[in-house]
Length: 227
Image (tube, rainbow, N blue to C red):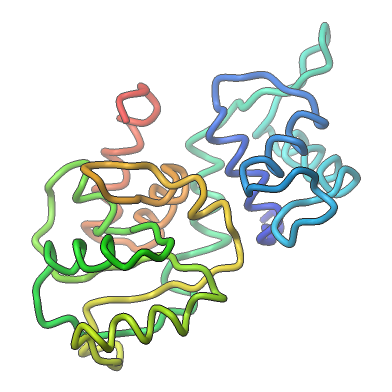
């Protein structure tokens, strides 16, 4: 399996978000930096510099995820579904650090609670997918937050009577990340921020069960540009 660091994840995300484009390695590097809100790759903690980007592209090409044009020397994505599956295997959402809270106000009101926090966030797993398509009745909410805002989230949630809880009692899970693209590239759906579609799909598939079923349905919607 290809190694997938957080920096490589940012590059993979850009490639997937631009699944119908052809591009140069320079454009990939520049686009990934812009996606994370950076003006250049060298200053970002979540973006590869040119040489590592080149190496990653060559690995993806070797494994047939990318194809290179003989005429333009530009690359394009050949296997979008398989690249998302690679992300789900290399970075399962169930293996990401999660901070559990118990919200006493139910699924929809907890979504609204997070939305009113004035803090950056993006919903994933069912909290994201249910806003696209109602499929599962659940009270579990997974939400990406920036790692350096973890304490602000704690203060806010405690003020709203959401108490820290062990996994069995928790229904709200904060997923702290250093990867700014997971929030900066969030999609707005019904007024809520949802993780970038390739990340949402990967998280659903790696979560398994009904989440995986939902992810496979939404994958087809995404491939047909209906999301």
